[in-house]
Image (cartoon, rainbow, N blue to C red; front, side, top):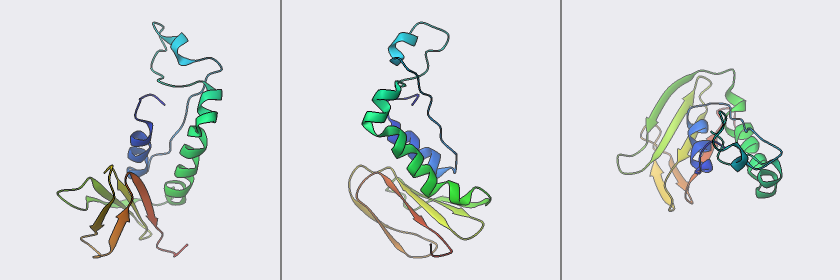
Length: 131
């Protein structure tokens, strides 16, 4: 919650296998302006809770990052020269695809020839264990 493009930032965390976090305050973040702690874009708990931001972030991390916490990233690649879609492959064979495109896209994984479809920005988890 340190930028105005929260979902993009969340997708970057997922793409790189990074655990996310949210800093919350009781009051609105505007009160922090011109202080030594003015890096939060939105931080008021009631607002973040009402918008569903907190639940969205932790659900996404639980689905797309947490299952691979004990795995290593063994490959990371862009699926297409023309589209902003990436794959992160983990040591157990699982893959996490992240799409930054705002429109619906269909793209083929160059390593598996599997077609991945997105309805816009989002992520898809292909668990090697079939879960």
